[in-house]
Length: 142
Picture 1 (cartoon, rainbow, N blue to C red):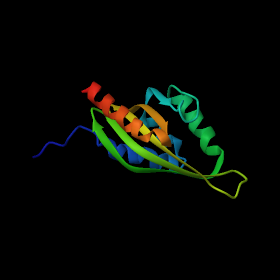
Picture 2: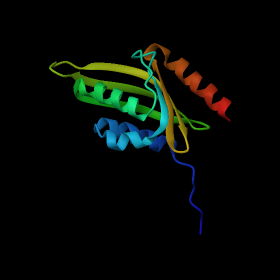
Picture 3: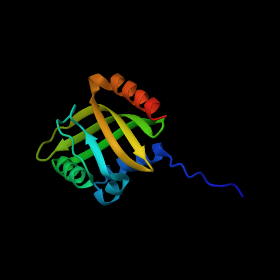
Picture 4: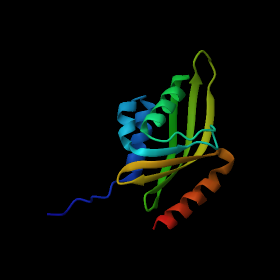
């Protein structure tokens, strides 16, 4: 009998995380984060929530500002050693507004033992830099 792989499919887990947030299901989202995870969104939003509780509060506040909200990852790629890179488009309609806002970013996600240890986001103009940073990080973690 073949033994099942114990290595998690990080791309599948990344898709799962986006799907849970898009459903606004934070009870499904938060167990994907390590207890001391870091969400470094300083380049895009100007804050760095640390720990599940702070990350949850940030996500709750962020999505509460929108009547419609969706993250659309453009084919996340596992770069190795627990690092996943994705270009992520956000389409949202703020509460009380008829128009939509669009935002496109580069995300570098670090997974440790099947949990998100960190996510770092980069503005659209720095997507190539984000991928390069993810590749360096994957090499350093190797």
